[in-house]
Image (cartoon, rainbow, N blue to C red; front, side, top):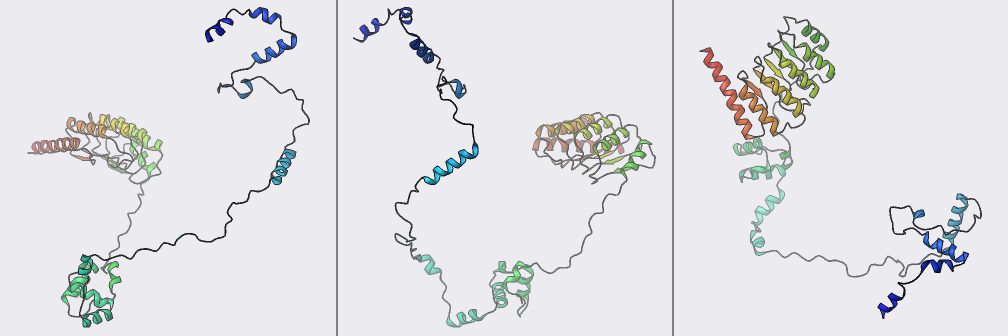
Length: 347
């Protein structure tokens, strides 16, 4: 039956049907065919179907009038009352905790003293209780000084009671003054380096954190032509990778520097690799300190450190705390080898 109904519509002449339609029917058909895809979410809402609004505009849009209308409609809606009004009455049973039953072990652990001892302990002061605790070996209730004083004396030594445990012993405290700030004149030091001053052997700019990066780079560039400075310390100067690259360029040329300290800075693995690469060809530096950078340098940089120490036969002191056992052992072996070689040359 279904097959016969389907074959009935296979031989339909669409052109004949269209010729038989009136103008109104053709307009209605055109409106039906102009409908877009209503399920296509990629199209705007106005493009998914035809415009079906034929009503003319009644009045201009007035926002205030619309708000007043909505407020009036909301006030006209009757409020819904609760099915069960709240009265504050508590329903159900109140919780009563069960009485804890002591186990046999807890019952046996309860100590029963003689009435005379119970009365003595009840009337004892805190100081007397601390001395009794010391005699019984309960040393955690007092400091070491109070404990040994109570053991070695026949009288009551602790006059403050149990509360004295949290207080430190009164020992003589020697105040230590703070480290004075570094008063090195950076501009004057830079001028001396540029002039290759013979009297300038040690450049210490440690803990001067307001030196511009451009000044540090200029100082490293000036060290290329200087052949008198033997120690250069730039610890805690906020030096970063550009400064590290300038120092690496200096190490490739300078032949007088013996000690370099760039600890406690902001040098990353890339800047440290540049310094290590320059150290492979440097023959004057015997002490290098690069520890305590802002970020961890990584395992690859530590392997490069070990390879540099194995290649450089002049470094006798290397300041860095290795986090991997392999590079640490290789570095220690290389530094020991350099020290032994120097000792043999002196003999």
